[in-house]
Length: 186
Image 1 (cartoon, rainbow, N blue to C red):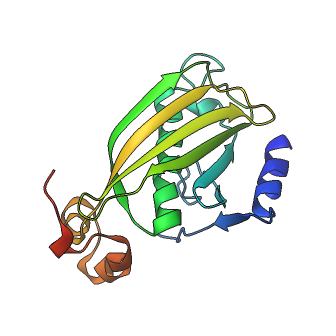
Image 2: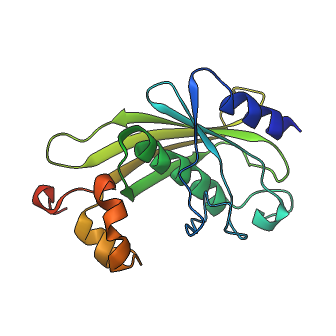
Image 3: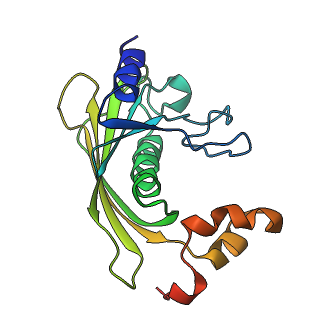
């Protein structure tokens, strides 16, 4: 109930814009509602540089009894932080680096809020974004997990070679990837 009210409040906030760019064929572990094994995270953009997701994970994602596995917590942060870039700048990126500091366990069947904030946009040539993220209990400002990440804007060639996208579907990614002439080597 607490989680549903938070989702309702975020999706109906005057400053929030609900994000739902998921198609029936998209199988993302983090956000696709069609992936029965996934997290099915829902996100909402707040203001000009923030993305928020409220979530409550069941026991299927635990490590120790009642505690969400740290890798799943990392996935929640990476998903929200990476989707911030897609929401703000309409760009798809690969994670280059992700650093977390776990201050307290995240528990099963408890409601939480993951917040991602953009800290750096790319300069004219590097395609590098930096994003900070945090997880808090839904009703408190207590910091439970802090994260920082670096993301690289992907190229058209990477969509064709690194992702399992059919050649006939490459066109729908054109507006979200870095054109070949702007490609820089890491």
